[in-house]
Image (cartoon, rainbow, N blue to C red; front, side, top):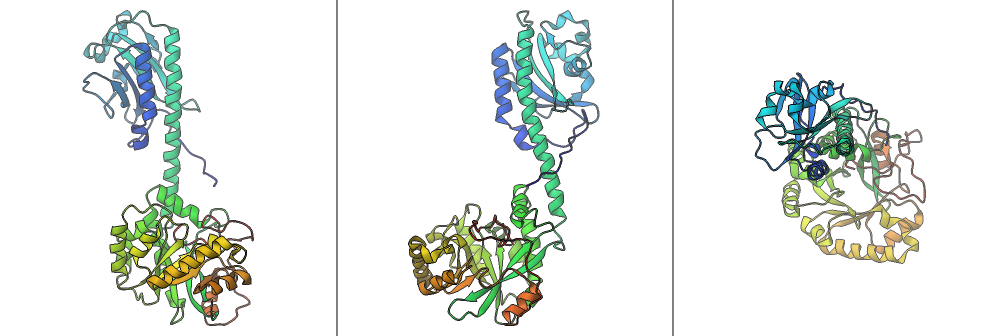
Length: 443
């Protein structure tokens, strides 16, 4: 995935709170501890220059009970660090009393400051972010330029961690802005992929698939993964759900539409609220699992409430995180076999054996079984012979614009239907949600 160019803040002007991952970065804590151990001093810290001519402590390593810690701010002019950067004081001070200017700084007598080593924290482009400092309350004339060199080396390690965090924060901000533009749903296009009865060939329903702008460059899975990473997964998924609900009028009477929703969104309650007042008689909620579900009991309770209005399908059976016991606990109406089980099943005894077990499970718990990713007549026939009820895949139809899918469901041919060219799939490539074609509402 191409990452937009990251714009870092202007020199010495940093606003807003620090990312928690940086504020509690154990690597920086280890660096400060190593500096203290090498120099034998009581305090080592990192600070940054912020708006309003202030300096803020970001990391402090000491055994002393100091009144200032991470988050403490003071005017830059009150600190050794700023005057060292400005050239008024040297980076290596073995005894503060050797430099009359230190008497003008209140911190000299407050701590007191005996020896002091400080180097600017510079980013890769040379801009100063803040400073890296170690100090002792007693003078130490054994300190040398070699010790200062050690401090510089450790400061370089800290600067690398800081810059990586800043770049990540900037990328996350760009991602949030990009996703926010999608939240009204107007930029999301829904395609329908038909699902067929394997015994009769009759189309039974469709699965709703989301398409985003520039899908040929960034597949829908990348959108949902990015959204989850920056804490907007539920919001983006619900925007896609709303876009899919708007297409229900194109699903013929007696057919159904499956909308994929993650456990996180179900547990949030957002889906249940969205379905209030919606005619959900033709709706199937397809539960996707791409992350470990922490509380299956809570998910089961939410699904029980949803089942009062809709049918429930479990996606990716055979590859998802849930075991068979959890599938039984969720009491689904439909099980969807992952497409990896469909691949060459006519030539693979292991896949046939596993599919046979799933057929028996579906029969025992009273639900339908759908095979995803059917591409060949041999795969269709093998699934039908094993007792699988339904199939979905390019053998029957590609994802179609909703009007073309409507005609398909009615048995009408539409030679002019626009194919889903946003996502080509080739025989022999892994078919999963990281492949563009059969990407669902939730990646």
